[in-house]
Length: 468
Image 1 (cartoon, rainbow, N blue to C red):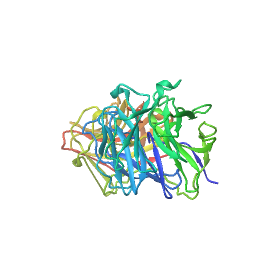
Image 2: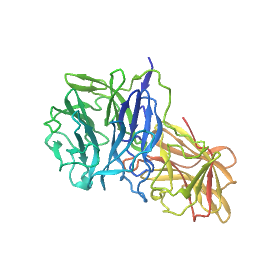
Image 3: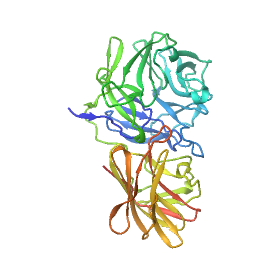
Image 4: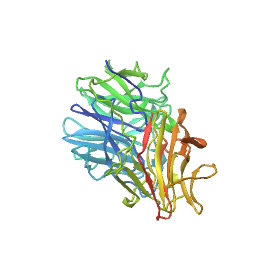
């Protein structure tokens, strides 16, 4: 029997939702203002995953931490894949595709309005469609409640003003009820929804014989005596042989929201998750025979495009980058001095395990370029051209003259403590002071590459490697 260990996705795959279509499993996650957004992951066993595409290819032109794509729901209906997501400043969107690898449709607003988040559709047996969503108090002034709409079957619009189906202010101990997932099983309607906040929350389920309620509630997954804080917000999925599973996140600070897999059984008409309601550390792989895999992190820059693990901090300009023959060329473009505010930083999720990251860099012309770790705070190691030539820079370290090509990197230790590395002629050595990586706004820390200047220079990066 092949075993798995949690987390099965040990990086920032926030607010996951998962479905099965035939023998294939698909997962998507929140991406906020990263471009491209809404990654599509594929698996044959719920444990080994690969990135196969993105459902949203554009976003905002400027960096807006915490905005953009929130808590998507992924569904398959009538031969189409559907993703519904909320932009808290715009409203509820949907995109759809016949092939999960794309192309996906242009995002369409199903319901406009500020503070509408975490939507999930259900197409009922009689053809009627519904949409449930939560509320963000930061925009709408209310939270801790779920609203249900009748929706046109083509998912173009909601058909009514909405019905408040769960007011969690009336439930003892509940706060921040959000992230609803709507299901129907054996004639019973179910809303799986987390509550209690990102860091210390729990997973509840609600059931009713009518989709409009009234709903009974039960807490089905919480930390208990385990070390898994706040296990909640995710999706229920079954296997081809009829077993049931639940995928959810755990907030790990600078590592973001990592994804766990819990066995799920039905007892006395209610789901039981994990080990009698507490997260399991390991278990048998749901479907035997899967090929070991994980979302890509390394990139050999063979082209013609960037690896699917990469994203920009806002909408990119095609002139910023070029990939070919084992190199990534980033133009040293103007932008905010603060790298957290610069759209042209190219980043990927910080791995949840200790690792060492390396690449080599050649700076042509004027500018500064390097490897950055960014969140609420940031630090980098890089190369800068000065009137006296090229120098290595890293925090408060005294600049060190370097040759044309420099190997730079970082060692990510326990607790996301970062030690920057560089080869200035005596092999790869530690440089600068250790840096404690920090989470961003609803996201984990990001490993990034950047190039900054007046637009005349360019940075040439050779293959990007991550070794664990």
